[in-house]
Length: 201
Ligand code: SF4
Image 1: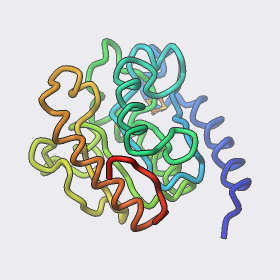
Image 2: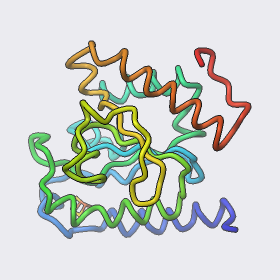
Image 3: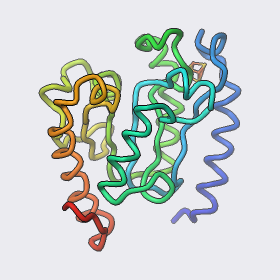
Image 4: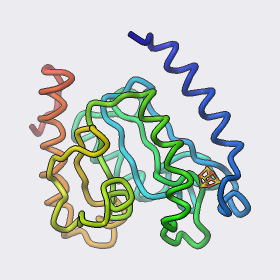
């Protein structure tokens, strides 16, 4: 069994490798590689599309308005970034103008994500938004139809939910998203911590 300290050391080494990456053209326009953050032993791994402008400047995932909303959702579930989750993206550098990363960029970058997932070894993977769902699970999946459903992706239990930025653009999606996250809480209790406290579930 791998000790927590070994995981942290391995993850730090992986971070050093990743931030030196120049496999794709996004390395020429980024300010920072956004490796991801959270608990190296987290049982929940949240994966979004790519860093935005604020994340590129800060070098951290989910620090803008959608990050604040994500933190509120996590807090309502009784989760924190520090203890329960690890957050990262399919693509680790910001695409100019916040365009959707190309299939080629995702293909070049995704091995970094797979190595993160191997080290962290989460019980539950949450894909945030349509692009993360498409690049991780394949083009047959649709966020409007498949959000909130459990399925196996790369042999890991996975659920897709709407990206927080979609909720900011369309608050009507919040109700469905809260239903989905309540199911994440139930699954977390089942797989990781039966005593997990969430005042709403
Ligand atoms: S997006 Fe990924 S593959 Fe491209 S330079 Fe950044 S870390 Fe490397």
